[in-house]
Amino acid sequence: QVQLVESGGGSVQAGGSLRLSCAASGYIGNVYCMGWFRQAPGKEREGVAAIKSDGRTNYADSVKGRFTASQDNAKNTLYLQMNSLKPDDTAMYYCAANTRWWTYCSSGRQEDFAYWGQGTQVTVSS
Image 1: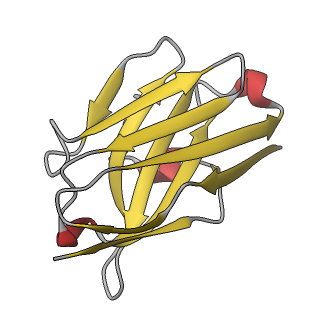
Image 2 (image 1 turned 90 degrees about the vertical axis):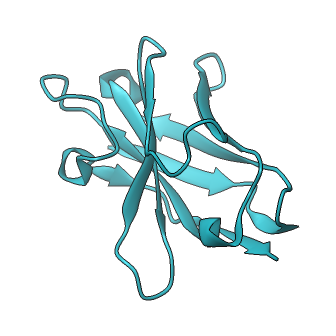
């Protein structure tokens, strides 16, 4: 089992920045890929970013150039730096862990992520 706890959400004006954190514990040695996802009210959950254990990242087109995923292996923590925030970025943000090493590490494949955090709310006002 892998436990994930997100933090760092809040309210910010458009153009501002936030950094989300996701602390991982449990059998994290099996985790090969971590992802960030978000769900806005009335919308389906969507992938935002993914980071492989070797540090390689990929991003949804909507956040490319604005969001950066990173990880601190010593602290077992995943981060999402969000800059130039827009009202459309308002959502509950979740981190998730993928232990299926044979799959492609992408936030576009939610079905590969078996472990999820409880989420942290991000609200961007215009």
